[in-house]
Image 1 (tube, helix red, strand yellow):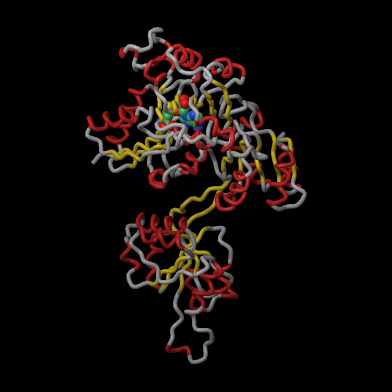
Image 2: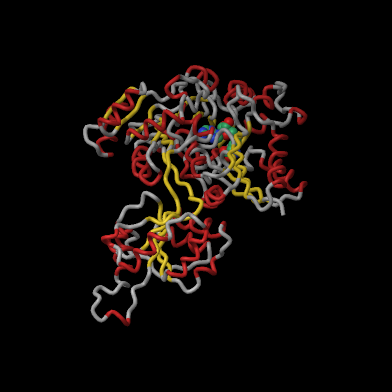
Length: 550
Ligand code: SAH
């Protein structure tokens, strides 16, 4: 059984425009082979353990040839049985994406595949500029055309480009066509294309819009006419990726342009908080127009086998205390002690994954849990347990540790009087090393196994390091985050220019936004310019960031 390849359209740039199916595959992919136009936020959604293969480096870097990409996909599929291989492409894989060629190669090699369509830039980028590609009374059709340099520039002036040049553009037909014309990849040749259309009879006053880096925080719309198209591109320095749209509908963009220039539009910020805490600030900075690269400075790691945390003896009833202390030895025999427990409580997806990994590595399987009650802190953890064939008996309504503690406490007889008929259920908590004592406060007799630990991140994947190098600033909420950032990004304080436009300003982030004076001092020590929030809150920090860039 070879691996399965998914040709996935990533959409035009805005990560919100990735399809649910695409996201589902990326989250479980073993390999992601991606193109240049795929946004960082979407790369950030991929399974963190996936092998990330960049086949679309910037033009001055080595670019992987199409034939090599085709081979690569087949090779991954053959070498990795049952693997999920995501081939992630900008927009839609079948709209000038060469997805068809890749699919044919997979068919020939007998590799199973699936196409996950994406939102093509041809339609969505104009939409983000307020330009409907069709409009009653203005355009009853729209046409998506490649304006690729090599294909078009070789054209004879007579109108039709010979098929051997790779493609034939029938300028006479295009000039006669009353519908909206949408050119992809056409900026370099637009002067030529516009002239040919005019020569073939298209009205030189036809409105034209160039939309650069559409749907991203860097989106820009430049208006022109067919007559002024070429000179406008030069004057306004329009650069790829950009879409050219021609026709009466372009005028509507003047009234319908809805995407506002926001205070942080065009800024790329690195958020170094742990993933869980980062989502709040990421959402707020994104809403203000920034492109956010979440780069947590800590990560979780499954322990080889669970270690028992002895809970303070003051809160352990004698019967349980003995168990907690004597079984602290690190050995897979620890799973034999599962027999002592009536209920297992999971408080995170990490906890579930780590516990089962340890259990399976030790040679056991889920039958060891037969007859036990299972509790989960919330829906996501519950869903993860279902993947292992385990249904939960208890999930608190509010999905918090506090809620779970209270819920499980109701199972424990409150007083010793007359409790003989109701034995105390033996509860085992499967948690990380940094879990707080919320559950133990409610369940003082429970035992806690630490199944994973949280550690400083020791390295960043290449794509992320490059993205971070190109950012405008870094957000630090602790001294340890600064220290670790400097360790994993040595270039960030020494200077590097490894990533060019549009992903880079060639500045390493030397600007930092800090929470807390200690964080500020550490950042200064490492050579960062620091802007520190007045108060130690995210609100205050976000306010400072906006002030700084306004
Ligand atoms: N398969 C892609 C197109 C690939 S060809 C799709 O369906 O969108 C690459 C061209 O698409 C670029 O040269 C540019 O013309 C256009 N393009 C892709 N993303 C774009 C974006 N965010 N803004 C403007 N143009 C974009």
